[in-house]
Length: 300
Image 1 (cartoon, helix red, strand yellow):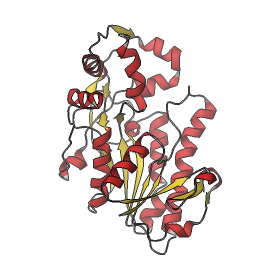
Image 2 (image 1 turned 180 degrees about the vertical axis):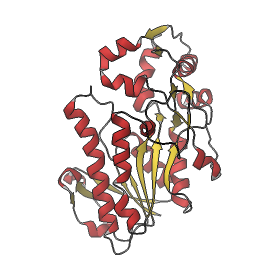
Image 3 (image 1 turned 90 degrees about the horizontal axis):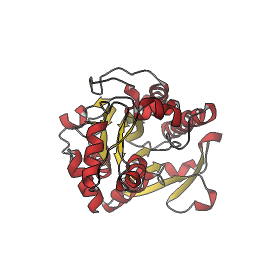
C-alpha cells in the first residue's frame, strides 16, 4: 500500500515506518521542516492549517496520523496543556479534511488516540464500548477522536487507535524507567494497585498493519496487551528483568508535589483496558505477557 504518515519521526512513527517499509509498503511522510521535503515527504504546518502541495496525496491508499506533542514532555501548566490539545486537534482536523477533499481518497484513515479516554477507572475492565472517563486527558482524547469526522463523512473508513503505555527501550515511559531501575532506585508509585495497560512496540506495529488490511474494523480500537498489570506488578517485572531490587516507593503526595496534575493522570490513574476488537478479529499478540515482553526488549 501507499501510506501517508504524520508524526513519522516520533517513537511510534519511527518504528512503524521501518516495520511497514520492511513489509513492502511505500511510505510518504508529512514533515514540518521545509528543508526535509523530498520525494518521500510533504511539508505541512497544522498550526497554520497549511498542507503544501496537497495534490501529492492523490492516490494515497491509507493514512496513519500520529502527530501530537509529547504528553509527558514537561510539567503541565496552561500553555503545555493547550499545546497537548491543539497539536492533536488541529493536525487531525487538517489531515482528515484534506483527505476528504481528494478526488482519489484513501480507503482508510487510522488516527492515534489514547487509553487516557477512559480516565481513572479502578479495577473495571474497559473495552471499546466503555464510556469516556473524566479529567484533562479524557477530554483531549474525546475531542481528538471527534475531529476525524470529515474523513468518515466522506466515505473513508476511520479507526482510532487507543494506545496504552508503549514499551520500547528507545523512548517513552520504559526508557525513562530503565536508568533508575538499573541503579536499583526503581519502585512503585502511590498504592501500586493502579492498572497500567501496555503494549510491546512490535505488537503495536503489527496491530496497525492488521488494521490497515481488515476493512471490517472501524471506530475505536484498544491498542494494548490482553494482560494489563498493576503498577506494583510492572515494578517487580522490570526489576527482575534488569536483575536489580526495587525497594523504593514514591507516595502519591510526593508524586503530586514533583510533577503536579500530571501525576494523577499518568502515574496514579488506573485503567484496566482490554483489546476486545483486536482479539475478536483474530489478531494474535506476539507478546501478550509483560515478563516476556520486557525480556525480549532488553535482550534486543
